[in-house]
Length: 215
Image 1: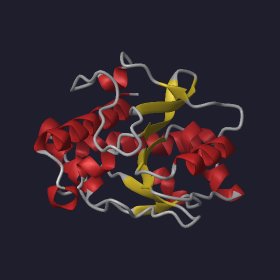
Image 2 (image 1 turned 180 degrees about the vertical axis):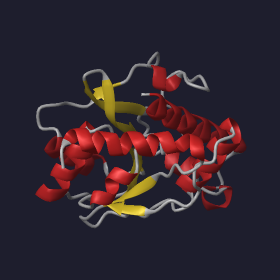
Image 3 (image 1 turned 135 degrees about the horizontal axis):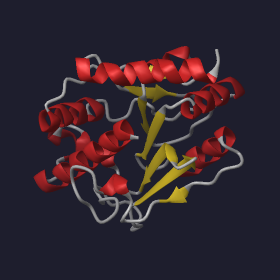
């Protein structure tokens, strides 16, 4: 399948957003890490986004395997976890094709996946490096304004950072580190986060979705 055809598939899926048929997915991967962490997070983010923008994105969020052609059904894919991530050659090739054809991957470190995901990103794009996004980057200034990535959960006393893989000015992959946005999207009862922290996480999530859609 050519990159042009893949791009058209993604474009058509993106166009369906206005007709209420738009869907997001969570990436399923191997290596032992818990790709299924935060099961309520993306549905809650979608519900918040729909309420904010009066949209009708499906709140049913499937898991999609990295090697599957089904990734091309979802212009936006979320990935999270705490531990090891391993992508084989077929998965690496599939994700690279998906991203270069117009897809968007958001990776949120749920604490513990950082060394593994950096290794796997390098396999997908060996000639590229993760670039830290400055506070003035548009992703922080969509519907809601932030001075950089908000800190939702504290782990090692490090600052929250947003990194990106960029191709011809377009962000293909956004990696949020030391923030734990996904935890902030979860049901309040899961982590007992304050109302303000959950709001910050959801608002930043809206910015990421909006930025990805507008790209």
